[in-house]
Every structure is written in C-alpha cells, then in structure tokens.
Image (tube, rainbow, N blue to C red; front, side, top):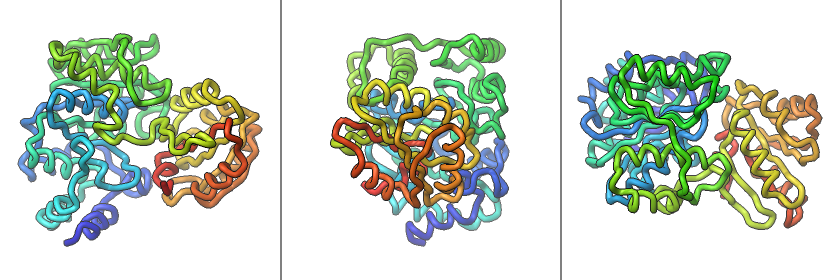
Length: 400
C-alpha cells in the first residue's frame, strides 16, 4: 500500500467529521478508541502527556508548549486537528511531519483489523500519531482534543497535566446550546489528582471547573498574566500565552530561562500557521482559521486596531456554524468576498451572501478563495487590510 492509498482509505473507509460533519454515522465516546488502543498495545501510554481542551486556542497553546519544551532540548510530539494543507500535519515533532512511509506501513500492517473495528477517522489518526510518537520515543506528547472533552477520543489518555483554554459557542449540536453545558463537556478532561490549568476565569463558567476539580481531587490553577511575549500574532494570543506559561511553570519551575525563549520562536520551532498569519505585505493580507463568534470577536477587534485604510473580508463557513453570531460582529463598511470551498461541509458562496445581506453586508460571491483573494488584492489599496477567515477549509484551499 502506498502513502496515498493509505490516506485515501482513512478518508473513505471510516466516519470522517472533517469531511462530512456529523451527517454520516458520526460517533463520539471512549469505548471504540479504548478497544483500538488496546489492540495496538497502548502506544504512547508511558510517555508524559499534556491534554488540551477548549473552544478556541487549543492549537496555539499546543504549539506554544511544544516550542517552549523544544528550547529545553526535549523532543515533543504534537497531535492536532484539523490539518490545513497536508494530512501529515496531524502528527508533528517540531517542524517534522509524520513520514509518508510510516503512514503507509502502519495502515498496511493493521488494515484487516481496522476494517473489523469500524473506528472513526479521528480515532485512527490519533492512534497513528501515538504509534509514531512511541516509535520515535519522544519525551512528551501534547494531545489536542478534537471536540468537547469528556467523550473525545483523546480522553483515554492519562496526562501529567491538563489545560482548558476558553469556552465559547461551537459544536452546539454535540456539546450543548449554552456555555455552561459546553464547559461541563470540556471539564470532562479533568482527571483525578492531575493538575489542571484554566485560562478563562469568568463568573458564568468558573464554578464548573472548580467543582469538577474539587470532586476529582485535581489541583486547579488559574492562568496568570505574564510579561512574556510571543511571535504568534493576534490579540487572542495573550490568553493562550498565559495558559501555556502557567503549564510550563508548573512542569519546569526551574527552567523558565529556557522554555520562555520558545514563546518567541513558535514559527521557527513548529512551523505553526493560520493564526493571524501575514501571507502578503502589500496590501497586507492575513490568514486566520477563526470560525466561530468567539474567534471573530478578536478578529474584528484586531482588524480595527491594525487597519489604517479599508477592510476587505474573504469569508467561507461550515454549514452548521451559527453565522448570525459571526455576521452581527462584522463591520458594515467592510468589503466582502463570500467563498465556496472544496469541502462539502461548507455553504456555497451564494448561500453565504444571502445570509450576509440580512446583516447589511453586501459583497461578491466567488467559487473559491484564491479567485476571491486575487480580486480583493486588485481592489485594495496599500493601506488596506485583507482578512481571509471563517473556516479552516477556507485557509486549506489557499494556494500560497
């Protein structure tokens, strides 16, 4: 089996939330991943682990942690999702992606058993990553939940520390229609006796974490503001930085002089992409995977702060998202380009444009993000700002 055949099988043979959403036998729960992990003889189970949940900021936090640990000379495996440009991004050690040969050999070796288990795409890619991290004998593993926490496949792990970034409205059809319900699902990663760091301390959700931690005897720490800086851009990175710094302070209290260097070398150490990332200079063009109302609160604020001219928004969106909560935040005087994507979970640009009109946002519809970007660049002045956002699928379609 070749690498491409292995990836094609992973995409086509099992339920795949990234491709299909929850419409095709999507399953959550821990029984299946536990059975799969047992069959594979528990790869990664003896390796120190950080487990991360939250609505936004999981990926940034994971890469901040990995960069900090790398400065200490540690080898760190990061499992994160979804990927943007390459399936292999889901398992990384520093800037190194899981090798094509490992993917092909791993799927080939276990294909017959996988076909009998009926595991999901996410469960299999998690186990693929853990198997590679075990093979490479990494010092630490950082696991980012896919969705929620309590029933997320990653919750089979026995971490050394947990991190919960923030709570916003996303995936309500699975996690609940309010922030309290969603907080309860995220709090499900808190383990008996395992320290947990909570980034967002607000009146509505904080008691969920304090009560859960108390019930499970888990030491709870609130992230504190820090004077450290990061090369990750975006106003929202302040909170992610505080959470990562708190985790590293607890794990390596004597090594701040080393891990703090990594906060400013995240791009260099991990090749992290898609969080207020500048992809063109004139006109300045930003790519950001922000895709829910919480993310857009920060994106709009950042755009207003940095833009000296006019704003040009290129936006696509998954069909299941609460678009009203996003649209109502967007500036009425902005220029809009609505885009379709190559993923069948997203709205067509024409449908998205119809939603935009309801909020007084008029613009052009495009078949793809690259056509939209070329049009926006032609229309924008040097002082203007172009923001490409709304879905990871939009960023994944960029041809850079």
